[in-house]
Length: 363
Image (cartoon, rainbow, N blue to C red; front, top):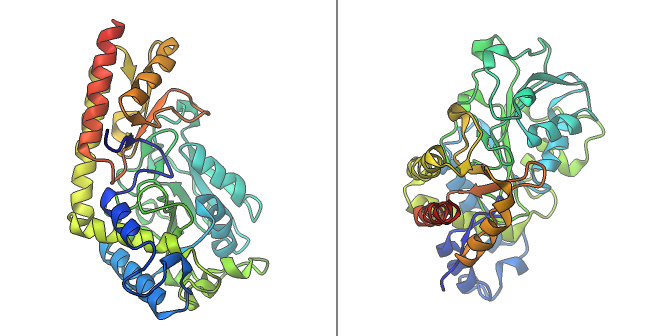
């Protein structure tokens, strides 16, 4: 039997071609006599890997020249502290609550300044997104935070809000951990975007921060040096030892993305994969997705069996069919299929075929 279809929410499925290349280069990278994980981060070999990865990412995401790309550590959870340490200047911060991850961001930021709720979809069970026109933003807000895609609840902003159109001059901060590189980014609407790499870009360990230059250099006095965006930027992400092997693997993913049509091609593939799943749920008598149609995630698709006594049988049959990691997050229950860039259309087709067959046998 071949490789399984891995629907894990993260760390997640990787492009097989990337894994094969990494395996072939494990002991000796390009005749250097070393594995990448053995290299000095200041040596010419790794510097070339780092510079290529940064250039490829800037090209793929069309990142403007006045934004800095930082390769950091700590994941999205650490950035929930690092962003306010750098951007709040002790002032108010506004948060739009759309699920578990934006809730965590609010709670963490409250340690460093006044963290406000500008809008919340909690009353709807985080199955909708509050309309930007309804957001109550503090006139003196230092930034407005959104989670672009909520991995657990399966809601996604299909268009970034235009804060200027709302009369707000604060920068928009976007946690794009779980949908980075799955769709284009309108950088004219963004001040800072951050995300862990372990969903769409590579293995765990690397955190990506893309920040507008004018937002750098305002860290609170008690901000740890290694988390000060200015120090990280001034030292080309090497103020401290970066996650070298994770950067290398992410660089291979960037090259894979370029070879496969870039972000525009990925977006079309992701639309097709998500449509296949949602069309099935909308016509099913046993399975359901509860997210409003206008904000359904293309990356993370939570679903439920209307008869939850069949959950264990469903998961056991899925595992036997080589369809892995479909159990939903413990906080919401049910099931979840994460269909990131590296998940093939064939994987989604196999899942739908299994669910159709399971539904027939349970009738």
